[in-house]
Length: 55
Image: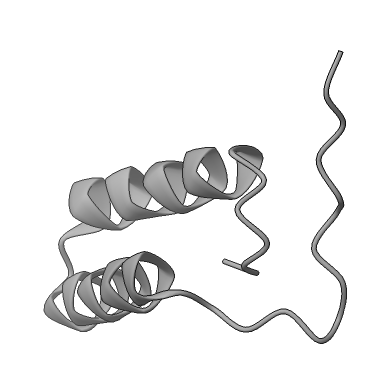
C-alpha cells in the first residue's frame, strides 16, 4: 500500500485548484448555484488525489 503525504499548510494551490476556484467565484457572483456546487465537488475530488496542493 502506498501512502501519500497530506498537504500541509505550506502547500500552495495548483493551476487546477486556482482555475476551479476562479470558475466557482464567477458562478457565485452570477448566481449560478448549480455550477458553484459542481466546482466545489470538483475541488474536493481533486484534493482527494493527494497531489500536495490545497484546494
